[in-house]
Length: 528
Image 1 (cartoon, rainbow, N blue to C red):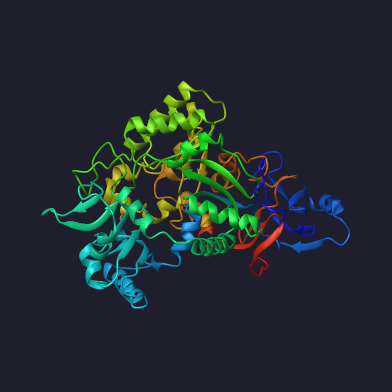
Image 2: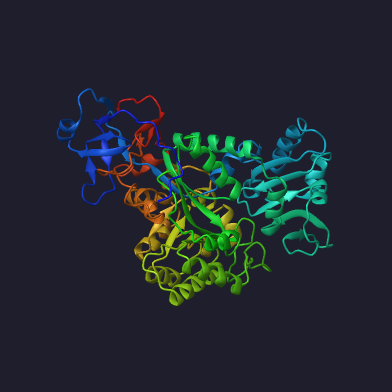
């Protein structure tokens, strides 16, 4: 295997004692102690047995009765972009349109005239009135700079007149919203958003800083591995960090669909790399997002009766991508949210597998928010993985939240059906899409979901964020469970949600270990 990283500095042997180890291993589900040597688990089991195998003078770490579980693996992120976005104008906590515009106006005061002002994370669904930011709003609050404000989903953004004049977007494009008089509103969707991203892309130095910020955040939340759906410049940031031995989170990198020809020309397939940085799959968009009203539905949006969303690729083009990747031994990660989008994605995947059968392809549907029972049966029969985001339910799944506005109550009750996914024997893996980036919030959202078809047990949810997540990136032999010989990647929690599901709402991460190195640590208090 091509190794992209320098050999890490050796960590001292450490003996972790007095903990409750949830191994996620079927052979030994629980343990009391663990010995870590050379970045891997060398012994795990009863405390007395593990102590006897420890070398003299080993560093002992008292876990004080807390829960230890494999490090969280976030299966769907935009990791570097998350770090970069944290340096932009943050609109995630804006409680109204007026407040969001105020944040942008204040930030523009410190930007030279004519330079871009970039804002991220707004969500109109939590605002009074619930409307999108428009060109008129941004022109009034920031007349002397081009401005882009990205919606939290990333599938929609709003720009002002100055920004439009700098963007090369076809005037007749259906990804530019217009009002009833045919005037451009400043709301851009899908491919038009990509044009805006390209025009405002950060330089290499900013990307590197974003990676450091994102990594620090990951460590504080118990995340030891991520799958990043990024662009070429993100991969360059990872490669440079790896070259310098500064990559502190394990990365599986999904490349954009535009890279397929390059992968095939170089005979490069999924799995190239090492334990720190490896090639994942080909990220392909089938449809858009519910928040942007671009996810492809079989029936119109409840709050936009003439709209059923959109498909990103013509079906022939999608089939060409899926068949090409499948034949080249490249895993597919197809973004499909609406029921119509999922139908198209599955037909394309099944057709590709029928033409070129593969026993262990591990193709994935990303998001899978509105699958039917037939879709789930098809996924089980074809061995397709469900890569889902439980935090979406926490953010928008209540009876008065965005899902109900977009879909109505009946469809919302069938949205994100984690229980049905598992019951249909479809492999379920969890990620966050960085909305927000927080495994514990995602676990709580799945366990305490508002509808029965969504609720799963704490253990099932943890498995989706650890053991099964490792399977999704072909890494189940090196991580995802706490077993001898596997990488010493794990997190320590303040409570055990498997015995007290309600504790998920208040549980915190007290320690994170990556490759045997303690990368995050809070003061550990003895449970009362």
